[in-house]
Image 1 (cartoon, rainbow, N blue to C red):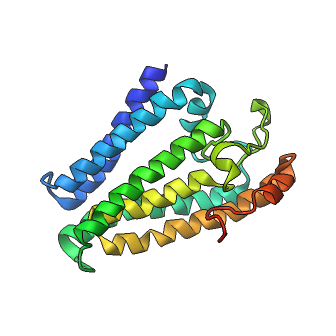
Image 2 (image 1 turned 90 degrees about the vertical axis):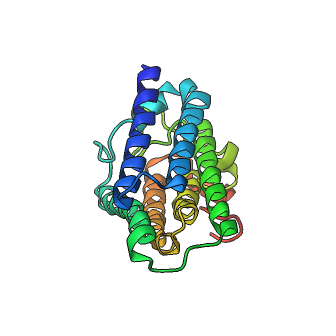
Length: 227
């Protein structure tokens, strides 16, 4: 079962990321996109083998959809625009690089920093999975899985480390692929995540025992000392 899910995840990431980027570019002769897809595939394998192989229950939950029973309606209302904005971000990168040229491309240093941000984002997501076996794709009180507050690992520093990782990835990817315009657009799905955090915390304060106390111990949501 794990091997099957690993293969599905690798093929899915390679096909979706590569398909959108190369189709949008109108060519496969884009070495930065090949590097990006390769990094995404390697990161997927490392995360699944190194972390999720020992968390089969979480892996099973991660393969479920973004709309689930028990999910509050407001989360459904937020997650769909986020997915749309995330998809548009991937479309905008090749469109800008090969046709629109909305802004001058970033320097080699900035684009290389983008790849580093993307890798750091994957690392943060992997650490979130390692610490929190309840890190499923939707906001839901997982009573059937013995849902409890997690305050160890990266969750002892900020309350939403997985979102930190996703945000780093959303800004890092367009910078590496040389699109300042897409990097600026990444603020749109980021704002959707910020709104989701507010909704999620309100829900967990009401439904999950101990979450209110957790917010007192770990004060910051995304950036220590800021918010």
